[in-house]
Image 1 (cartoon, rainbow, N blue to C red):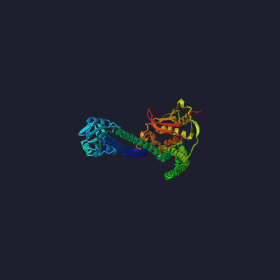
Image 2 (cartoon, rainbow, N blue to C red):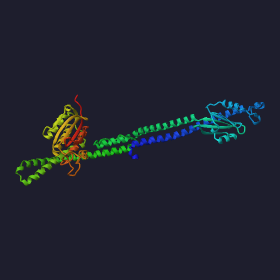
Image 3 (cartoon, rainbow, N blue to C red):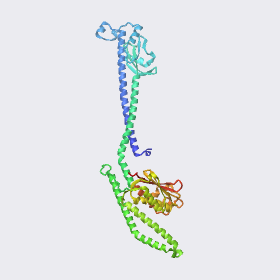
Image 4 (tube, rainbow, N blue to C red):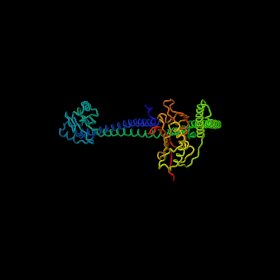
Length: 477
């Protein structure tokens, strides 16, 4: 399940769950401590109030003899033996002070005297316990409300006083405390997610940098390096990566030099062969018929070999770190000159808004891009249907259309790789992929990227393939 989340999301989720767990445990502890404290305080105050009221009733019901008044005693021998009239008893019960509107019940002389309560509201076991002289208290429900029932003995056998103290305020306080703690836990969890997001961003920043540098190396920027070699935690990884990148750069440079050297060495015998072939072609009519067909095949292979050597020289020059020379060029003029010259006819259409657009470009590289695409269309894709220059995209967009069958979607990225030929099966290979050596479009992609542009292959609405080049451009000042 966690595999569906990225590393950043897993770190953030871990922080959030940790914050939620800690805040939940803390909330439970706080609620337990506070609720016990408030409940004990409420119980203690109810018991004290009930005892005070019972003492007040005891004094009003029994009174004191002069000798008892002198010593302030409530012993049995000091109590009056005369029963108090019921109306006076009721008045005494009603006159009792109450800080929380508690209901009151007095069991006296075999009768119950109540205020805001009924005798059967108090459980029978509590009544018998209080009448036996033992203090008792319990949470009970009366009329759908939670109350704290407190019972104390009155001093005479069989007599007891009860007070029913409402617990609504206490319950509301505990409910609000519970809601507050739950909300605090949720807020803490959200803060944990935010902290986790920030921590993961900071912790994974070196990894993001490594990804960016690795992507630059993959795009051909072999001089890209990590700058974290002095980091105590990432220094080893950075040094290993930089060492690998440096070794790769040296290897590619060596391979480029080797390819360049080979290409240069091949140019002399190639020129000799091409000149010799041209001489033979000039006397083709004098040759016997059995020789003419092999001669044509040899000429085709020599042309193909010449393009291979030229492309290898171009690739080796690019891999060897050739920085080129940037100069301000008018894109429409350069594209028109390169495309029309390669096709041998006028095939370029320039929109008015793109006619004056300029950019800092390497003319040789940019001309090679247009020439390779037009030549590819002419030689292998049924002919070039046109080249269009329009404003848009990064600044300017160049369209190169051909009359071939198009390029399958699965091969549209592969054809820009070195020696990329797409599907090798004869039935599935397009004309644009037959007969080529697989370097022309790779050179195009490298040169477009060198100009900070993009290239992609799509279907032409009228049929065939369309190569779309976007280049950064601006209007001249």
